[in-house]
Length: 251
Length: 89
Image: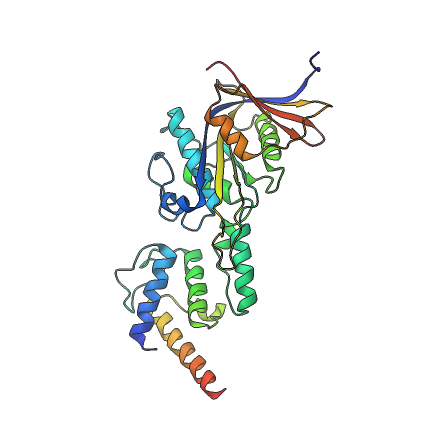
């Protein structure tokens, strides 16, 4: 017998895309990580951006392209960046260099490019977004925290839509002291346009006492978004609330 | 270091900062408009200069610098003073 569900919030994912890239490929993508939206990115836009930001921008540009939104304005939209451990490698490298050379000066680009809010900031500049932009999560529960926050923002109905950009490394980079990884990290990113009403993938938050236990990962979210018609649903748990669920609906 | 070698090193640092090799790095080139740098790029360049030459540039000193020539003058003074201090130690 199916458990009774109490829907707490609902919206629609009206555009989406995901990418999965070896970290070694990020530099090649940095100048223009996806199809052009309106005009090519300024060479400065992602010059000092974290690798997760580049991957997130790539997923975003592919989502816009896949949906045919090349001329659509997102000026009134919002954007939420949902990274996991963004900036950890660069910060570790800078700490190591500072310890080795106390006179070492830290670049001012670290602050805007290596923090929780870096992805949303870069996306807002690239798309000309004037709505809310901020980062959510940053740790192991980032995906569920980001999706619940996105549902909350859209439920306010003050903006026409919201981009949610989720990113993570899996496996995480294991850096040498100089900052270069000694392993082969893979960066995963998923970009989703969330609207109150549209056609697309249904996004729900519902209360469930016997909640599923996994918090969700960008890796499995990205895999779902790659083939949403073959996988009917994707779920993750939100501690203390219930379950966030994506359900494929008729296109 | 000679002024020309400082200028060469500065060109490399500008390229690292902006992604473009400066076509003109004459003394009267403006650091911002002339090299296409905004305020954060300028601070980034100063940080790179500090790390390359192992010197410190104070905010008050930076406020007086608008052109490449003024930055090279400051670098000549700082690098020479640093060399003299190292020689005396």
